[in-house]
Length: 335
Image 1 (cartoon, rainbow, N blue to C red):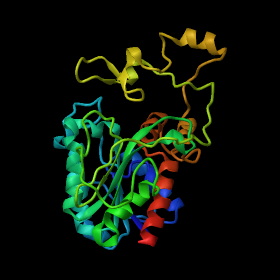
Image 2: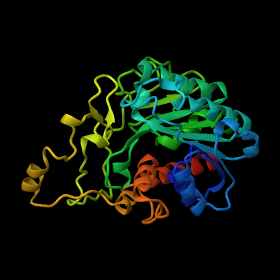
Image 3: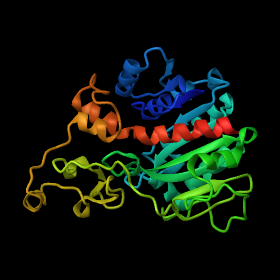
Image 4: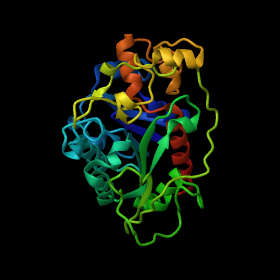
Protein backbone atom coordinates (compact mmCIF):
# COMPACT_ATOMS: atom_id res chain seq x y z
CA UNK A 1 0.00 0.00 0.00
CA UNK A 2 1.05 3.60 -0.56
CA UNK A 3 1.19 6.63 1.70
CA UNK A 4 1.41 10.40 1.14
CA UNK A 5 2.59 12.64 3.96
CA UNK A 6 1.45 16.23 4.63
CA UNK A 7 2.99 18.39 7.37
CA UNK A 8 5.64 15.67 7.58
CA UNK A 9 7.85 17.25 10.25
CA UNK A 10 10.64 14.92 11.31
CA UNK A 11 8.95 11.90 9.77
CA UNK A 12 7.38 10.16 12.78
CA UNK A 13 4.21 9.17 10.94
CA UNK A 14 6.19 8.27 7.83
CA UNK A 15 8.56 6.00 9.71
CA UNK A 16 5.66 4.26 11.47
CA UNK A 17 3.80 3.72 8.20
CA UNK A 18 6.87 2.39 6.44
CA UNK A 19 7.57 -0.03 9.30
CA UNK A 20 4.03 -1.33 8.73
CA UNK A 21 4.73 -1.94 5.05
CA UNK A 22 3.54 1.26 3.37
CA UNK A 23 5.58 2.90 0.60
CA UNK A 24 5.86 6.69 0.97
CA UNK A 25 5.22 8.33 -2.41
CA UNK A 26 5.57 11.97 -1.38
CA UNK A 27 6.08 14.40 1.50
CA UNK A 28 5.17 18.04 2.15
CA UNK A 29 7.02 20.06 4.80
CA UNK A 30 8.15 23.70 4.96
CA UNK A 31 10.62 23.64 7.88
CA UNK A 32 14.19 23.68 6.54
CA UNK A 33 15.64 21.64 9.40
CA UNK A 34 12.92 18.99 9.27
CA UNK A 35 13.56 18.78 5.53
CA UNK A 36 17.24 18.06 6.21
CA UNK A 37 16.15 15.02 8.22
CA UNK A 38 13.71 13.94 5.51
CA UNK A 39 16.29 14.39 2.75
CA UNK A 40 18.74 12.21 4.68
CA UNK A 41 16.32 9.34 5.31
CA UNK A 42 14.03 9.62 2.27
CA UNK A 43 16.38 10.94 -0.48
CA UNK A 44 14.34 9.43 -3.31
CA UNK A 45 10.90 10.57 -2.16
CA UNK A 46 9.49 13.66 -4.00
CA UNK A 47 9.10 16.54 -1.55
CA UNK A 48 7.11 19.77 -1.61
CA UNK A 49 7.72 22.70 0.74
CA UNK A 50 4.48 24.68 0.47
CA UNK A 51 1.14 22.91 0.77
CA UNK A 52 -0.57 26.00 -0.66
CA UNK A 53 1.13 25.35 -4.01
CA UNK A 54 0.92 21.56 -3.97
CA UNK A 55 -1.41 19.92 -6.50
CA UNK A 56 -2.90 16.86 -4.81
CA UNK A 57 -3.58 15.23 -8.16
CA UNK A 58 0.07 14.21 -8.13
CA UNK A 59 -0.92 11.69 -5.45
CA UNK A 60 -4.06 10.44 -7.18
CA UNK A 61 -4.60 6.77 -6.34
CA UNK A 62 -2.62 6.85 -3.07
CA UNK A 63 -4.06 4.59 -0.37
CA UNK A 64 -3.53 6.81 2.69
CA UNK A 65 -2.75 10.47 3.32
CA UNK A 66 -1.45 11.40 6.77
CA UNK A 67 -1.05 14.85 8.25
CA UNK A 68 -0.37 16.43 11.61
CA UNK A 69 -1.72 19.83 10.63
CA UNK A 70 -0.24 22.80 12.59
CA UNK A 71 -1.40 23.07 16.19
CA UNK A 72 -0.28 26.57 17.19
CA UNK A 73 -3.71 28.19 16.79
CA UNK A 74 -5.64 25.48 18.67
CA UNK A 75 -3.14 24.75 21.46
CA UNK A 76 -4.22 25.86 24.93
CA UNK A 77 -0.92 27.74 25.16
CA UNK A 78 -1.32 29.64 21.90
CA UNK A 79 -3.44 32.59 20.80
CA UNK A 80 -6.43 30.28 20.31
CA UNK A 81 -7.37 31.68 16.91
CA UNK A 82 -8.55 28.21 15.96
CA UNK A 83 -8.94 27.12 12.35
CA UNK A 84 -9.22 30.80 11.40
CA UNK A 85 -5.53 31.16 12.26
CA UNK A 86 -2.92 31.24 9.53
CA UNK A 87 -1.19 28.08 10.78
CA UNK A 88 -3.89 25.70 12.02
CA UNK A 89 -6.05 27.01 9.17
CA UNK A 90 -3.80 25.03 6.82
CA UNK A 91 -6.14 22.16 7.69
CA UNK A 92 -8.32 23.43 4.83
CA UNK A 93 -5.40 23.05 2.43
CA UNK A 94 -5.08 19.49 3.66
CA UNK A 95 -8.75 18.97 2.78
CA UNK A 96 -8.12 20.41 -0.69
CA UNK A 97 -5.30 17.92 -1.26
CA UNK A 98 -7.54 15.09 -0.04
CA UNK A 99 -10.27 16.17 -2.45
CA UNK A 100 -7.78 16.24 -5.34
CA UNK A 101 -5.97 12.98 -4.52
CA UNK A 102 -9.00 10.99 -3.27
CA UNK A 103 -7.06 8.58 -1.00
CA UNK A 104 -8.86 5.61 0.51
CA UNK A 105 -8.18 6.91 4.03
CA UNK A 106 -7.02 10.02 5.88
CA UNK A 107 -5.13 9.78 9.19
CA UNK A 108 -4.63 13.10 10.99
CA UNK A 109 -3.11 14.25 14.28
CA UNK A 110 -3.25 17.33 16.51
CA UNK A 111 -2.97 18.47 20.13
CA UNK A 112 -5.66 17.85 22.73
CA UNK A 113 -6.51 21.56 22.69
CA UNK A 114 -8.33 20.99 19.40
CA UNK A 115 -11.19 19.43 21.39
CA UNK A 116 -11.87 22.53 23.46
CA UNK A 117 -11.06 25.20 20.87
CA UNK A 118 -14.06 27.51 20.23
CA UNK A 119 -16.28 25.42 22.54
CA UNK A 120 -15.75 22.37 20.37
CA UNK A 121 -16.53 24.11 17.07
CA UNK A 122 -13.02 23.55 15.67
CA UNK A 123 -13.43 19.81 16.12
CA UNK A 124 -16.89 19.94 14.59
CA UNK A 125 -15.43 21.77 11.62
CA UNK A 126 -12.71 19.15 11.12
CA UNK A 127 -15.33 16.40 11.12
CA UNK A 128 -17.75 18.33 8.91
CA UNK A 129 -15.12 19.21 6.30
CA UNK A 130 -13.99 15.60 5.92
CA UNK A 131 -17.59 14.40 5.89
CA UNK A 132 -18.39 16.85 3.09
CA UNK A 133 -15.68 15.13 1.04
CA UNK A 134 -17.20 11.72 1.71
CA UNK A 135 -14.84 10.62 4.50
CA UNK A 136 -16.23 9.23 7.76
CA UNK A 137 -14.67 7.49 10.73
CA UNK A 138 -13.48 8.17 14.25
CA UNK A 139 -11.19 10.20 16.45
CA UNK A 140 -9.49 9.30 19.71
CA UNK A 141 -7.10 10.82 22.25
CA UNK A 142 -4.03 8.56 22.46
CA UNK A 143 -1.22 8.79 25.02
CA UNK A 144 2.22 7.66 23.83
CA UNK A 145 2.92 6.28 27.34
CA UNK A 146 0.63 3.38 26.46
CA UNK A 147 2.78 2.46 23.44
CA UNK A 148 6.11 1.66 25.03
CA UNK A 149 7.88 5.03 25.29
CA UNK A 150 8.89 6.72 28.58
CA UNK A 151 6.76 9.83 28.31
CA UNK A 152 3.14 10.89 28.49
CA UNK A 153 2.13 12.66 25.27
CA UNK A 154 -1.59 13.03 24.62
CA UNK A 155 -2.64 13.74 21.05
CA UNK A 156 -5.89 13.53 19.09
CA UNK A 157 -5.83 11.17 16.11
CA UNK A 158 -8.50 10.86 13.46
CA UNK A 159 -9.07 7.93 11.08
CA UNK A 160 -11.46 8.82 8.27
CA UNK A 161 -12.18 6.47 5.35
CA UNK A 162 -13.78 7.20 1.99
CA UNK A 163 -17.37 6.03 1.99
CA UNK A 164 -16.96 3.61 -0.92
CA UNK A 165 -13.95 2.02 0.85
CA UNK A 166 -15.76 1.20 4.09
CA UNK A 167 -16.48 4.66 5.44
CA UNK A 168 -17.54 4.98 9.05
CA UNK A 169 -17.26 1.31 10.07
CA UNK A 170 -13.80 0.99 8.55
CA UNK A 171 -12.57 4.19 10.20
CA UNK A 172 -13.87 3.06 13.57
CA UNK A 173 -12.16 -0.31 13.25
CA UNK A 174 -8.80 1.46 12.96
CA UNK A 175 -9.06 3.17 16.35
CA UNK A 176 -11.35 0.79 18.25
CA UNK A 177 -11.86 -2.92 18.76
CA UNK A 178 -15.43 -4.13 18.35
CA UNK A 179 -17.14 -4.19 21.73
CA UNK A 180 -14.37 -2.27 23.48
CA UNK A 181 -15.07 0.43 26.02
CA UNK A 182 -13.35 2.99 23.83
CA UNK A 183 -15.89 2.96 21.03
CA UNK A 184 -18.30 0.93 18.99
CA UNK A 185 -18.41 -0.21 15.40
CA UNK A 186 -22.05 -1.21 15.57
CA UNK A 187 -24.95 0.47 13.78
CA UNK A 188 -25.11 4.26 14.21
CA UNK A 189 -27.47 5.64 16.81
CA UNK A 190 -28.86 9.12 17.23
CA UNK A 191 -26.27 11.46 18.71
CA UNK A 192 -27.17 12.77 22.16
CA UNK A 193 -24.21 15.14 22.54
CA UNK A 194 -22.17 17.34 20.20
CA UNK A 195 -19.00 16.11 18.52
CA UNK A 196 -16.90 17.76 21.24
CA UNK A 197 -18.25 19.17 24.49
CA UNK A 198 -15.91 22.15 24.73
CA UNK A 199 -14.23 20.95 27.91
CA UNK A 200 -11.69 18.54 26.45
CA UNK A 201 -13.17 15.73 28.57
CA UNK A 202 -14.75 14.07 25.56
CA UNK A 203 -11.83 11.99 24.31
CA UNK A 204 -13.30 9.57 21.77
CA UNK A 205 -15.96 9.92 19.13
CA UNK A 206 -17.15 8.61 15.79
CA UNK A 207 -18.56 10.43 12.80
CA UNK A 208 -20.87 8.82 10.26
CA UNK A 209 -23.13 10.39 7.69
CA UNK A 210 -25.72 10.39 10.49
CA UNK A 211 -23.31 12.21 12.81
CA UNK A 212 -23.07 9.32 15.22
CA UNK A 213 -21.11 10.31 18.31
CA UNK A 214 -20.04 8.30 21.32
CA UNK A 215 -18.65 10.01 24.41
CA UNK A 216 -16.52 8.71 27.23
CA UNK A 217 -13.12 7.11 27.05
CA UNK A 218 -11.21 3.86 27.17
CA UNK A 219 -11.14 2.13 30.52
CA UNK A 220 -9.25 -0.87 31.76
CA UNK A 221 -6.24 -0.16 29.54
CA UNK A 222 -2.94 -1.38 30.93
CA UNK A 223 0.35 0.33 30.22
CA UNK A 224 2.90 -2.00 28.67
CA UNK A 225 6.65 -1.75 28.05
CA UNK A 226 6.66 1.38 30.20
CA UNK A 227 10.21 2.32 31.19
CA UNK A 228 11.59 5.19 33.22
CA UNK A 229 15.01 6.66 33.84
CA UNK A 230 15.41 8.18 37.33
CA UNK A 231 18.26 10.35 36.07
CA UNK A 232 16.09 12.29 33.63
CA UNK A 233 13.01 13.66 35.38
CA UNK A 234 12.15 16.35 32.83
CA UNK A 235 14.00 19.40 34.14
CA UNK A 236 12.60 22.66 32.75
CA UNK A 237 13.21 26.40 33.11
CA UNK A 238 10.40 28.95 32.97
CA UNK A 239 11.82 30.55 29.82
CA UNK A 240 11.44 27.21 28.02
CA UNK A 241 7.68 27.44 28.43
CA UNK A 242 5.30 29.32 26.18
CA UNK A 243 3.41 32.40 27.30
CA UNK A 244 -0.12 32.00 28.63
CA UNK A 245 -2.40 34.04 26.33
CA UNK A 246 -4.63 35.07 29.26
CA UNK A 247 -2.13 36.32 31.85
CA UNK A 248 1.29 36.23 30.16
CA UNK A 249 2.78 33.85 32.75
CA UNK A 250 4.84 30.83 31.61
CA UNK A 251 2.59 27.96 30.53
CA UNK A 252 3.86 24.35 30.57
CA UNK A 253 2.56 22.53 27.50
CA UNK A 254 3.66 19.16 28.88
CA UNK A 255 1.59 19.50 32.06
CA UNK A 256 -1.08 21.74 30.47
CA UNK A 257 -0.95 24.23 33.33
CA UNK A 258 1.01 27.26 34.49
CA UNK A 259 4.71 26.59 35.09
CA UNK A 260 4.43 27.74 38.71
CA UNK A 261 2.20 24.79 39.52
CA UNK A 262 3.29 22.20 36.97
CA UNK A 263 4.85 18.82 37.72
CA UNK A 264 8.20 19.42 36.01
CA UNK A 265 11.39 19.66 38.00
CA UNK A 266 12.86 23.18 37.83
CA UNK A 267 15.17 25.54 39.73
CA UNK A 268 12.60 26.15 42.48
CA UNK A 269 12.24 22.49 43.47
CA UNK A 270 15.51 20.99 42.22
CA UNK A 271 17.12 20.61 45.65
CA UNK A 272 13.97 18.99 47.04
CA UNK A 273 13.92 16.56 44.13
CA UNK A 274 17.56 15.61 44.60
CA UNK A 275 17.08 15.05 48.33
CA UNK A 276 13.85 13.07 47.95
CA UNK A 277 15.17 10.84 45.15
CA UNK A 278 18.82 10.64 46.23
CA UNK A 279 19.89 11.24 42.66
CA UNK A 280 21.30 13.84 40.33
CA UNK A 281 19.44 15.77 37.66
CA UNK A 282 20.43 16.52 34.11
CA UNK A 283 18.78 17.63 30.88
CA UNK A 284 17.71 15.01 28.36
CA UNK A 285 20.21 14.58 25.55
CA UNK A 286 19.00 14.73 21.92
CA UNK A 287 19.57 10.97 21.66
CA UNK A 288 17.38 10.34 24.71
CA UNK A 289 14.68 12.58 23.24
CA UNK A 290 14.80 10.52 20.05
CA UNK A 291 14.34 7.32 22.04
CA UNK A 292 11.54 8.90 24.07
CA UNK A 293 9.72 9.50 20.79
CA UNK A 294 10.50 6.02 19.48
CA UNK A 295 13.01 7.16 16.84
CA UNK A 296 16.25 5.26 16.21
CA UNK A 297 19.16 6.82 18.09
CA UNK A 298 20.90 9.38 15.90
CA UNK A 299 17.92 9.85 13.56
CA UNK A 300 18.37 13.65 13.64
CA UNK A 301 22.15 13.69 14.14
CA UNK A 302 22.69 15.82 11.01
CA UNK A 303 21.21 18.83 12.88
CA UNK A 304 22.49 21.03 15.71
CA UNK A 305 21.29 20.08 19.19
CA UNK A 306 18.93 23.08 19.29
CA UNK A 307 17.23 22.06 16.05
CA UNK A 308 17.21 18.38 17.05
CA UNK A 309 15.18 19.21 20.17
CA UNK A 310 12.70 21.20 18.09
CA UNK A 311 12.24 18.63 15.32
CA UNK A 312 11.95 15.72 17.75
CA UNK A 313 9.58 17.62 20.02
CA UNK A 314 7.21 18.39 17.16
CA UNK A 315 7.15 14.82 15.87
CA UNK A 316 4.55 12.08 16.29
CA UNK A 317 5.78 9.23 18.49
CA UNK A 318 6.80 6.43 16.13
CA UNK A 319 5.19 3.55 18.11
CA UNK A 320 1.82 5.33 17.98
CA UNK A 321 2.24 5.89 14.23
CA UNK A 322 3.16 2.22 13.75
CA UNK A 323 0.08 1.05 15.68
CA UNK A 324 -2.15 3.30 13.58
CA UNK A 325 -0.49 2.16 10.36
CA UNK A 326 -0.89 -1.53 11.13
CA UNK A 327 -4.56 -1.10 11.96
CA UNK A 328 -5.14 1.09 8.91
CA UNK A 329 -3.57 -1.54 6.69
CA UNK A 330 -5.66 -4.33 8.20
CA UNK A 331 -8.87 -2.28 7.98
CA UNK A 332 -8.34 -1.37 4.32
CA UNK A 333 -7.37 -4.93 3.39
CA UNK A 334 -10.49 -6.26 5.12
CA UNK A 335 -12.69 -3.62 3.49
